[in-house]
Length: 200
Figure 1: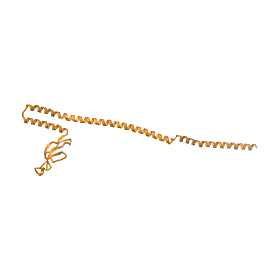
Figure 2: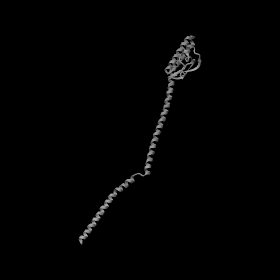
Figure 3: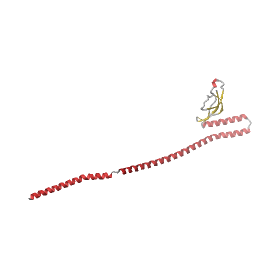
Figure 4: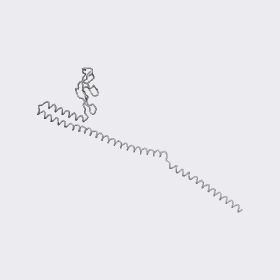
């Protein structure tokens, strides 16, 4: 009788032990699931992701706008500086040319003073020729050169025909016979065409 009771108690204890093991196993298996739930809760919702993207885009736009404003200001300063430098170059170039011409003005003053004292026309002519040659030399140093017309073929790049004259012979047809006004080039750029009479 006692042995039967003991067996029943042992069976019940075994059932309790097995139940506890089952419970423990279920708790262990549920633990990762609860951890997964926690991890899922850490993930951003679509609205939060959208807000995050919007914040990043606004930050990027602000950076680009700041960069654009800086570049715009730098370019504006560069443009102003370039205009100023160009103005100074033009001003200094004119100053250089005028300074180079001043000796010619000095020679002209001396020539006029001497003309008043002398009646020798030949001396006047020689003096004026010297001044003219000096003046042309200075202008040549500044890049100014006369367009040659004597015996040259008529060229619309350098000449302007103001008269057409019958050619004395066949060889002179299309050539410049006379120059009415001298033309000039400045550094190979025509600044005034030579006005000429052309044989036809």
